[in-house]
Structures are given as structure tokens and as C-alpha cells.
Amino acid sequence: MLDQKSVFEVLEKHGITFFTGVPDSYLNGFCNYALSHFPESNVIAANEGNAVGIAAGHYFASRQIPLVYMQNSGLGNTINPLASLVDKDVYAAPMLLLIGWRGEGNTEPNHPQHKLQGEITPKLLEVMHIPYTVLTDDDNEFASVIEKAVMYCRETRQPYGLIAPKGVMADPDKPNNVDDTYPMSREEAIEVILDHMPADTIYSATTGRATRELFFLREKRGESKSTDFLNVGSMGHASSVALGIALTQPERPVVALDGDSAAIMHMGALTMVSKVKAPHFMHVILNNGAHESVGGQPSAGHLVDFTKIAEASGYRTMGKAVTNEEELIEAINNLKNCGQASFIDCRIHKGLTRKLPPIIFDHREAIDELIDELNG
Image (tube, rainbow, N blue to C red; front, top):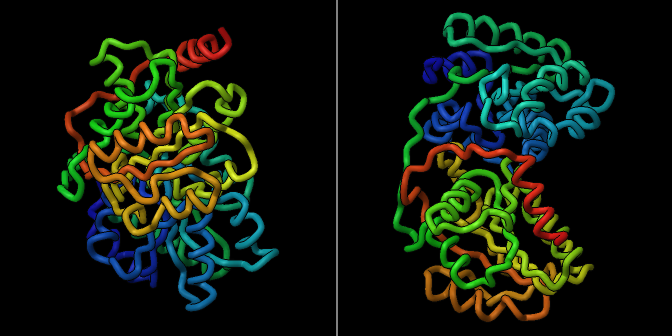
């Protein structure tokens, strides 16, 4: 990994002192250094397009070049603002784009959700006419790259890409930071839900730890995985997949096991239940106030009132977040047959209850089992 103190010294030397983006495990060294050393000038955004907008506003207000960080899976969220906001023929806002390169070559053989994204990452920048450099684990070379990139940004008022392969910006040891804010872990909350929903319930689990914990809970409990959709990619869309199933089979109980960061990323999805009928759809946010899967950086999950947002969007709720097992059981029992889409903000603590290996499974086989389950 590049020496992160040196990385930030180089950036500061060239006037790069404002950072915004969505944390990534390939960038966790960078993200955690920014979080601890630049708390006032590091904005963890709702999604990557949001970060590009924030960065553009910073440039407009200061004439200083910002840096936007993201995993390459989030590069798609930036295409609209990069093409229609910061482009030289529109408002010409320069910025550095630091992109973690998941799926480069054969670095993620067990994670097909990164395969195509890894292949097209440089091509997406090329098609948007954004020059880039693939970074290496060389501090002197990094300094030269930043000098060239900043010069380009200043001369053209355009973005420049910095693509970080595995190991360049990532600390290999991600800490398991367990806190005691709330008594339940995410795995414990998922097991409570499994215990108190009907056996034929369909589950759509969000990207990251929720998918892994559901997967291994099924194995621990000796249960079939045929009713589970594991949203291993497409962060923020697990609840939309669940809603699509619930609308198509309205008598079937469907639970979205969402995360706070994922729900925030595409919060507009919450409003969909205001105009459709999904009487057996339950949306649960497993809210630990963190981007835990990529390093534990804080989200806005414990700062916003998801319950009020959900109520205003048309969900039936308990009127407040649930904070322990007894409250979660009460909420499930009250809402699972309420006759409309329901919502639970389930507050949990950070950290893992046990170490879990990566999920290795046949994605096509798994989705075909779910399709067969749903279609008889």
C-alpha cells in the first residue's frame, strides 16, 4: 500500500484538500486516513453522483480542485453528472477521480458481480474523454502522477482519473470495530426476522455483510436458500428487487433486508410504495450507522429518522426505530399482516458476531432456484 501520510502530503502540496465520495474496501487506507486527519474537509456522500455534484460546488465556491473517491461499481452513478454537469461544454469543473478497481483481470474470480465492471472501468473513462493513470504501489511515481493530473485539471478544467488496483490504497487488515450502541448485531437481527416471518417468505438481502450473514445463517440452520435473493452487487437496489417481486406476487410475504448506507444511496426508492399496492412487502433497514463492509466509515444512518421518511412515503411503521430483540419481534408481529407495505428501522451495533468466509456460489443456479420457487 502507498504510504497514506505521503499521499495526502502530495495532494496538499498541489492544493487538493477537499475530499468527497463513497468508501471502498480497495481504498480503505485512503478513506480512513481522510476520515481521521481531515474530518472537516471529507464528506462521505450518499452516492457517487452526489459526490461529483458536491465536488463541483466546492470548485465553484473556491476555485480549488477537489478529489472524489469511489469503488468502480459506483462509476455508473457518476456518468450523468460527469457528462452533463462538469464536462467542458457545460460548466467545466475539474476534479480528481480516485477509483478502486475491483474485478481487474482475474483478481475477483469468486465475485462475478465485479467481472464486467472491472473490464469496462477504463473504457467508461475513455468514452467520457477523461484521461487516467493506473496507480502503482510506488510513492515517488504517485507524486509524479499527481503533478501531471493536477496540471491537466488546471489547464483544461476537466476531471482526471486515478485508478487504484488491489493493494495500492487498501490496508489488507480491515478492523472489526464492535461498539455497544445497540444490543443486537446484524446477524442476530436477521435471525430474529427468520424466526418470526412465515417459512415461505422471500428475502432480498442487500450488498455486503447482510448477504453473507443470510447465506451462512441458512447453512447454520440447515435451511434451503431457494427463497433468498442475494444482491451481491448493485448497491442500493435490493429493496427495489424485493418490491418488484412483491408487486408481482402480492400474496407472498417479501422482506427486503436493507442496509442504512444502501438505503441512503438510492433513497428515492422508498417513495415507490406511495403509488403501488404491496400488502405483504416488509422493508427492514439493518441500521448500524456505518459503511461496515468497506471499513466501517460512518454513514448518516443513525442521524436521520428513517421511520418518518418511510411514513411520509406510504409505509406502515411502528412510529419509531426498534432498538432490541423484543421491540423487533413486536414490530414484525404487528406489521407482517397489516395489509400494506411496512417498514422497520432496526438499530444495531457495528461489528461482526463471527468471522465469515467469502460467499462462493453459482449465481445463475441460485437465481434459477428462486425463479422456480416463485413460479412453481
